[in-house]
Length: 100
Image 1 (cartoon, rainbow, N blue to C red):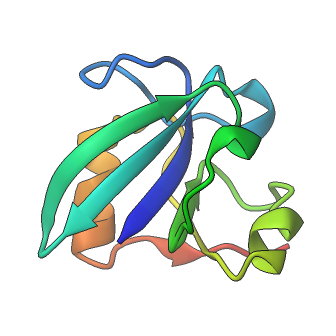
Image 2: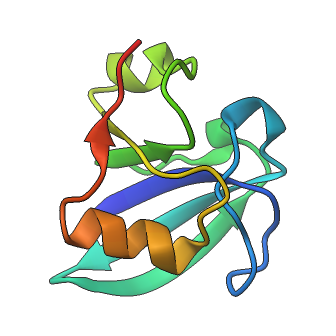
């Protein structure tokens, strides 16, 4: 399964979840059987060519229409969370469905 999220950097250890308009990079996480298999970084969301299953954004009210049109399920995590915190929230179903 593939998960995309807007980040403040391409540093897998220190990147934080930010609102989409502030994203300096987009992370694409390959997640399988409860484990992160890989993390790839892209300069823009449009550069991601794979079929994404989930997007995780930093707050309600983000412009998620393009994701919904692509049949991507959108969840909300805490702004400023690092990648590990976001994935833990995803894994344990602690994230909320985004509304628009």
